[in-house]
Length: 163
Image (cartoon, rainbow, N blue to C red):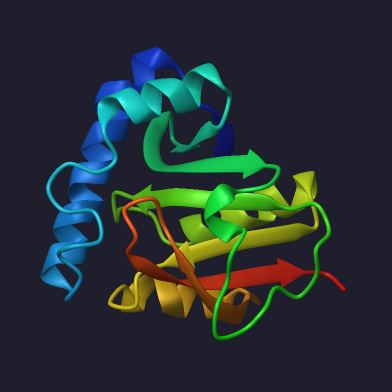
């Protein structure tokens, strides 16, 4: 049995461990630059916890996954090129989703959780993140175009809507 709940400050060591495993996986699978050696930073995660944006996936009383979920406009998504969003309805954005690789299906379960909160979702990833691109597309997201994150680097943007 699994659950998804808001992250707590006492979860941070385990969360940082999950992100370290995910960064290593990305590096070993052709995507060493998206998160580099230290993304996301501990301070960012603390802010996410404070704002109730960070969630953990728990199975058998152990944290195996983590993601940020924010309902509301995302500044990175205000401009999109080589395409367009499917709609301009209110949406939730999934960021920084990661797992420790020990449990299968975490991505789909996290999406199901987010879909229960809002029916319109957006997500983005680096073009070299083939694993994430596969999972996003497999789970019903449609490619919408290219957005740029805070540091100016491009990301492939996707949207899911029940419409």
